[in-house]
Image (cartoon, rainbow, N blue to C red; front, side, top):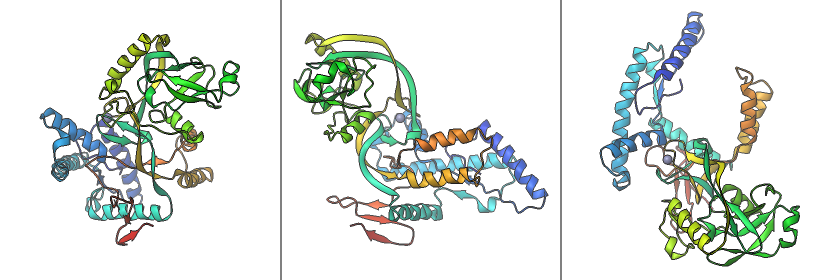
Length: 392
Ligand SMILES: [Zn+2]
């Protein structure tokens, strides 16, 4: 049984899956097959934390001021209470599962398995820690996996801003102080003579190089884009490729920090955008604004807040090895999709997999079994009964 979340009552979707699985289980049991339907309950890390955070908000309490251990205990009590209700509902539905083997995802043996698995992945070189641009929710104060990012269509303004010898088109003028280059397509005749020369960031007059890259769409805006690696995933890749620096400018609360000029520091993105645009306009450097520009923005799947990419050291699972095994299993028929057409969706998903961020900055759930010495992180990975091992 996919363990239902223990943070509320079951809904009609649960009733559907319980009915279908119960039919299959009873059918095979009546045929005399060896049949096990294993029930479970999920502590549901981030999901439960979000539910509990809402409860605290209603009570007028601030999540971030409650000590970690106290908060953990509160959520544990809340979860165990809901687990009882959820199990009662499963029993009332008549689910013919084997209750004697029930599992909760925070049972000590499960936690031990999680630790041992992490250590095995680490020893096999399948899990690693790296400083990368991550999806950051300003409200929930955590990174999210790619699966927890929702893409929404929004109408915003596209600003055409003078950068000296050329004009750049952007929907994000507020972090321009962290620009490291202006990029054009290498075959774009308009800019051929400018490649290798310098452009100027408005308001601070800082010089940045004009670079050429195949990934720039000559047909987008003016055909010249600013490269701000700390706030955009594509720009981050571009910066890595061209050996450009990465300058942070937005903090964990979604506010501008250095290197923004003093007057913009501490402003939230929306406020800063208005202020920066007004100043660029006053400087006579705003050439055009398209107020009906439709584009996709990444938002938190829980609260809808626009995600701010941030550069943070996080733990990643290497997907290539796992993906190749999964694809092979489907291709050889070891795993079959019903209905068959979903195989295409699966293959598309597998093809576009990036290494998976498993770090979360949350209180609730199983912690990554890694200990850091403040000067040289990381120090030790602990797995199951195998004890500690020092990482060189
Ligand atoms: Zn959120």
